[in-house]
Image (cartoon, rainbow, N blue to C red; front, side, top):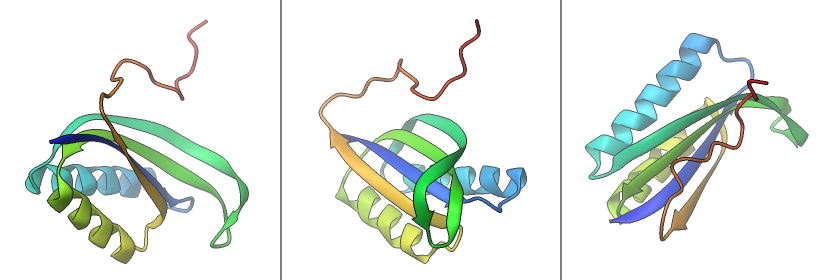
Amino acid sequence: MNYYEHTLIARQNLSQKDVEEVEKKYTTLINENSGKVLKVEKWGLLNFKRKIKNYTKGYYLHYKMEGDSKTLEEIKNKTKLDNNIVRYLTVRYKKLDLKTEYFTKNKS
């Protein structure tokens, strides 16, 4: 099994309920295809530097997971067909950092 970080950007005009459904959908998809979700980070609604498909913002969901080629192929196929997803990126790692969260609000 290899370690991956998979980031999804959902459309800006989705309701909070729809964003939660997208998160559950991809968590279930990963777990059912010989993968394991280690952590999910919800980065929230962030601005784009440039427009992507006429959108200026998007909801970011970041998965830290382990899986194999079957898992990645299934995620890629489902993401291409999903109209709620604007962009996605998957990066392979030798070791994952599960402690650091880059988009959290400071409590000070």
